[in-house]
Length: 230
Image (cartoon, rainbow, N blue to C red):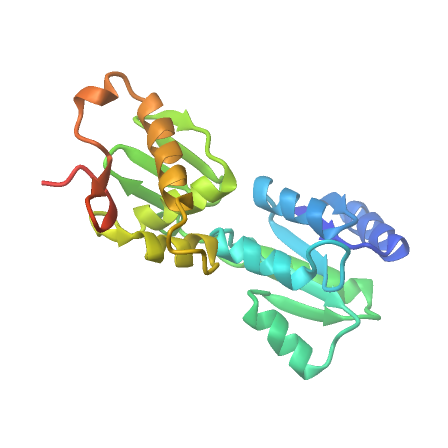
């Protein structure tokens, strides 16, 4: 089992890492939220253990970011904030289990083993396909016509939202609210800039893209739509 442990308390982190390695598992350790989020986003783990209170993004912020990005790796929140309200808040944020400190290592290991035994998300739910574009939500990868397309995180979220709504006209306001989750000035061109970048990167993956109908269509006066159309 491959485990990511996100814990800023050195003694606790080393204790967990040592015990899991002795149990035969592969363990990566992150000592702050920034490193933990990066590893959780970009590496494939069987299970993640995260403290709730961390420097940088805290445990709940990491959880929300993982779930928003479509990453369904089981996560156990390990924290001294163990009352009912805190546990409910953690579960609502996307945690699969919650264990309060202090804890017995045997219980932690048993809970992680149980999480790892849960059926993995089906391939159908983690792969999106529109026309000749394929997006793997677990691997955080995109291919067009079988060729890899390198996208930045915001570009990936933008394309993911469009792929979840193929053929639908998506207004700039819809994209701002769903992808950026901020209330931008309605006159901002941030959407147009990012759509242009995604369109260019997708087109660079195929030969003679200029001779094909546009994959991302601009709907004048309305917004954008993904798909070749009729």
